[in-house]
Length: 306
Image 1 (cartoon, rainbow, N blue to C red):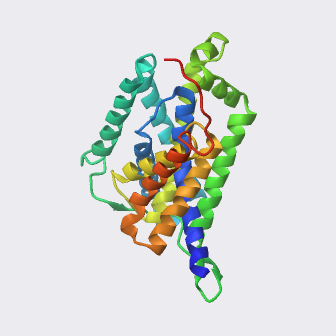
Image 2: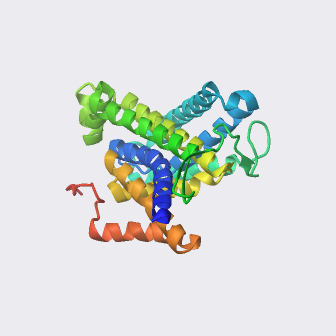
Image 3: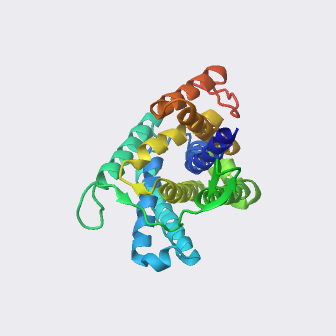
């Protein structure tokens, strides 16, 4: 029973990180019907921005409350600008082109970020993994039983930060004027433009918002895994995409549920079988869900003219 509870806690902690990245996928798809495969690499850039900010702050300041907030704000702000640039110069000129063109462009941006960050000159960090600073020092906050179940402080803090960001996003999408405009654009951006909605600004804001959430996920993942490298966003991005598809791509609460389910499935596979099976079972879980519900757990079947 203790092992089950420990795996449940660890799975939820991993699932919240997947959820923040999956939300970016599902928001962009909901607005543009575009799979932004560069999104996981935006998360990687956020982790490096957080690393650089923490290094500049130094040891005493980086673990203070103000230092941690500054690390998150710098990473999320920088990635929001990166998302804005990607949308403006890569995706916007292709908005009326076939979707395959945008998809190939997204893959190209992904490779550019992954291998660009492996260069070793100027501000670029090089390919070697780097130890992320301990901006949150690991401590055992809760110990249940005879030490069989341990909840670490970074797990609680990561969970609370992720939940706070997701609740803020939910409020923004469903309770604000920008959220109403975003939902209108998601139905049809051409008609929304004819009704006076600034579609370019709404789409750019969606990219900025999703990229900021990905940066937050990158910091949380770096705190958990303690090491960052230029290819870290590849597998995290794929897993988050799997989570978004499981929940129903384009459905915000579905992305969160799918990510939590994926985190739990991976943790139970590692805990009760072998870690080498983790990725295979994760993608197998996606196949099973799509066989039963092709539209995902919360998605809806929509007719499409061809």
